[in-house]
Amino acid sequence: MKLQIVRQRKLWWTVSSVLILAGIIAMLISWQQLGSPLRPSLDFVGGTRLQVERDCSKPNACDQPIDIAAVRDVMTAEGLGDSSIQLLGKEQQALSIRTKPLNPDERVRVLETLSSKLGAFDPTKNQIDTVGPVIGQQLFASGMLALIVSFALIMVYLSFRFQLDYAIFAIIALFHDVLITVGIFAMLGLTMGTEVDSLFIVALLTIVGFSVNDTVVIYDRIRETKAESPTRPINDIVDEAVNQTLARSINTTVTVLLTLFSIFFFGGETLKNFALALIIGFGVGAYSSIFIAGTLLAFWRERTEVLTPATATVDLGGSNLASTNDISTRADDA
Image (cartoon, rainbow, N blue to C red; front, side, top):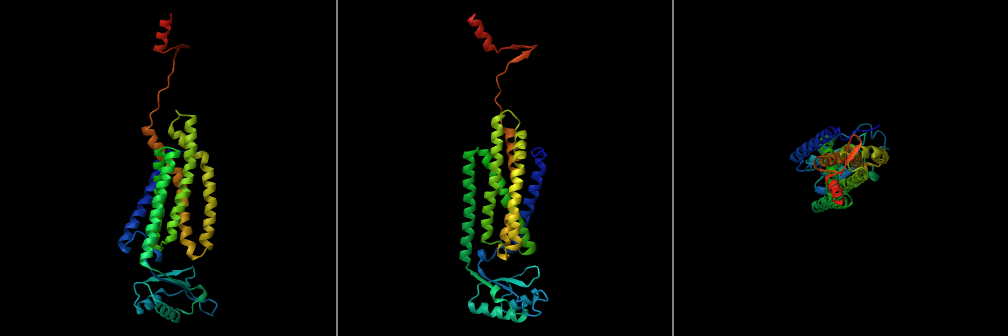
């Protein structure tokens, strides 16, 4: 099967534009409702997170899922009515509560009150984390700095290895991957209460590295093919390069996704969002390397590249007419 990537580029660009636009709208709504484009976790805003799970080893302890309204009533009675409450797990026997910073006595009191209302909790599965707002701001600033530096270094490397326009379109493809991943998490934050933590920044950096690797492979094949056939149309060169590397890109992505899906389903709650971000980012990264980076390069080169006319002879009736300079030279010799 030979894909005609360049001829259908408007389709690929439309799909990407719709996804990016939907993500930007979700981020704007999230900013209006939450004061942030994504729903931030404890890592970024600071506070205390209580994560508890019922002790299902006791008789009839887990017959019914946790009543979130009862949890809200308890938190309101404790003066913590603005807390973020989220049920965890398919059976909804676990609970995550994010609230303002609590001292040890306040944490004990809240846990005891919740236990009396909801049933006994498994002490081996209880998790309590406290992060100050200053640390959260530092984590966010460090993560953004790392992301910006990675883009800059990739730009420099690709400019030296290929050419400047190659590097520019590779960076555009990376922005495409990051924007779509962030946009989908903005949607999930609005609809499902999905939060982003410091691992989300790590996921974005990993996505950038994975995506640019695929793009470099395709660009390398474009450069080799162009060197062999410099007068060949750039659209044909890009299509051939993509088709030659398509099996490698698909096999690599599918292999990685199998591992990530295993982490998502069996890695526990703390790794679930991290794995989900990588699944989305790697899938979008493979898409952008195949359908975005190369088509943008072809679109640009098609309009800016000027071929140097080759010196040729004109054949009339089987006879070659030499150039005017050659005729003049022969006349002088005579």
